Amino acid sequence: MTLRARLGWGLLAIALVFVIPLLMAIKSLEELRTTTRLLRDREFAASLLLGSFRERTDDTRNAEDALLFVHDEPSARRMEQHIDGLIAFTDSLDNYNLDLPAARIRESMESLRRSTREEYAAAVRGQSADAERISSEQSRPAIASVDSVLATTATTLRNRTRIRVEEATTATRDAEVLAAGALPVALLVATLIAFWLMRSISGPVRELDRGMQAIADGDLSQQLSLSTERHDEFGRLALSYRTMARQLSELERLRGEFVSVASHELKTPINVIVGYLELLREGIYGEVNPKQGEVLATLTKQANSLTRLVKRLLDISRFEASGGKLDVRHVDLQRLFHNLESSFSVLALQREIRFSICRDESLPATAHWDEDRINEVLGNLLSNAFKFTPRGGEVTLSVSCARDIVTITVMDTGAGIARDQLPAIFQKFYQADNQAKAATKGTGLGLAIAKEIVEAHGGRITVESEVGIGTTFLVALPTEPPMNKRRRDSSPGKGVA
Image (tube, rainbow, N blue to C red; front, side, top):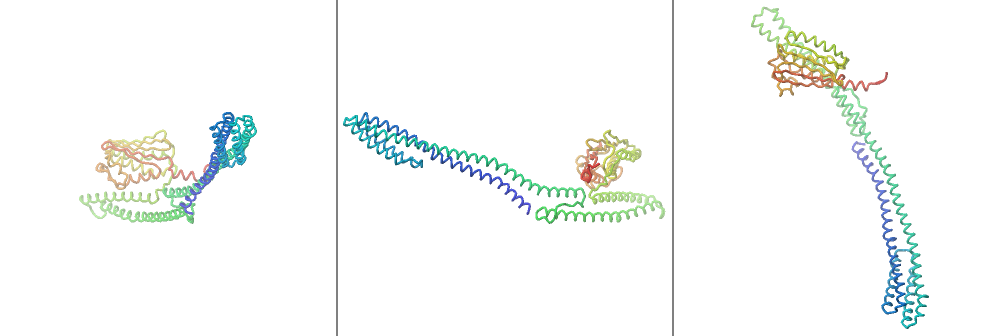
């Protein structure tokens, strides 16, 4: 499965994990909404209508009393209207399926209608005793029958309302339980899917990063644990990595061959030329007149410059061909700086330049460096300092350490470098405008080599200068190169006594 498909399916699965509980919760809420709507549209509406029915029944009872005692035409019409209204309310209540005995109510209303007419006729004729008898034996029992039916209906309505409320309560509780149970499960499943996605992606990415870091450190033999047979992007990347490492190894082999050939093909002819020039100057092939001696001296000087240039070129080619590999060992710092002081003290005496090396008490006893390379860097910086410092000047090397970083400062009171030229002095073959004040001509490669060596140790080199005042180079080196520390930390048996 490709990485894109894996991400797509994983995100879809996470979405479904959250959507399914959401749909279930929506369904529960829909059931709750249906129950609530039925409760509102049936039970509550029926309850209101039943209350109005009872009020109308009370009004009918009052109208019957008025008919008995007043017995005029308006009272008779009002009684008829109340009876018609109760019959209409009976039809309305019957629509709510309340098990209402509507026929009984209608029968009672028709009986009431007949009795009230007889009651009214007796009262109009002045037969009060007959009217009261009809009222007590027929009219009032008919109204009481309706009240009885309404009381029974009210009890039925209360029971239905209670059942509907219990259903709504149950639906609400079910929705809460579903949400409380489904959400943690959904989160757990989504977390597991996300963890699977992260692990299936981050693992190969870390492996590729480890391989690329090894190549950047110059280790072209680093193998990946990723299979090139994988049917996803990581399989193709693993195959590309293997191809790249093989091609880089081939390039390194070709560069090594070039360095070997160049070393032989360039150094040998130059040494022959220098040798014959020395023989000519010594008069082996005949006496040399002063003019010829000047020409031979010039040729010897140029041949020596060419020798130094070839040596520098071979040094930087070898260093680059090795991928910046270092022969890191324990370096006795006191011995290193003592040897530098001894080597350059003679040069300082010859050129009448004050020279000193200041060691801070914080300096550790040893460091894990490539001693030959670091000696080359410091020797190059000191050589440049002496080259551009006039007689009576001063060259100082100071060294200190803080937080496992050794800081080496080489300061001189020489010609200085223009500020606008400082960014370019570490480029190959670049030479500043102060070459006229140098004791010897340079090649423009020393600082480029020094920068590559320092950076290969995980350090940095910077420069500050002011024309006519002097130049200060600052080299900051960790006591152990990062590459060497990573290899030592990951070596088998780490931490075992």
